[in-house]
Length: 282
Image (cartoon, rainbow, N blue to C red; front, side, top):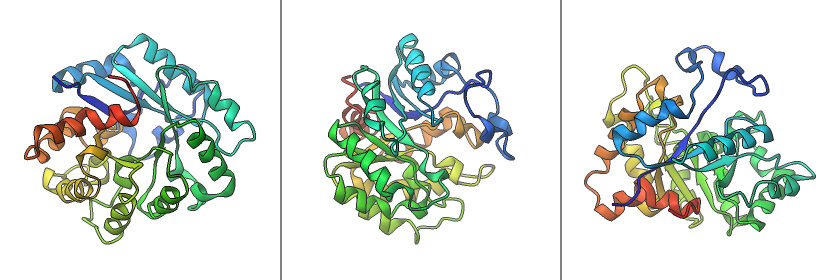
């Protein structure tokens, strides 16, 4: 039976003073303002039959890379970690080389959505950093809001050999059921074969208290039609998802929504795409 992979989740440990978790104390995040560590996730994975995961960064810190790799070495279900380097730094390549040959270091992400400059990802110094990732064939996670999504076209044109994946569908405004400011740009991004998309992070863009599967369905269907199941991957975005839904709810709503697809298509969404994209070797 094909392995099931959760391509996007996090851990954090509030006892570690070297990391900045101030965002967890912001209004509305109280429910997840606690430590989440590997043992906590195990029961959720078992309950839905997920075999392996990809642990994604939350810090702009090389120290978190080291911590995450330690967790991955201690927990076999963590198949890979998506870490961080300073793309704008003069020693960005040296930072990357420190990690790139580790068998569980599978990608890089920057929290682009939080940058004050909406054009951060296409700044000249950042583009130089992305060129380094392309040189070394290191996948890059695009953490965008809808307002950033149009940049995917420039990135897809400029970096034809850089594997990229859009996290959380670029956070469409699901609560308001808005397609007009998102649909054209997600379809444009899908025209580039090296860009994938994570079917993740949707419940927290919906109405936290009153969302229903039908709210997510049009966004899932548009993304699947644009990218195809072979370029889409399931991600729980746990424990952030706990603001609006359990791990099991997130998994089950996607499984139900794509339940009419072929076995091969569902296998891609729930493991095959992530395995290929991050070269997990599973």
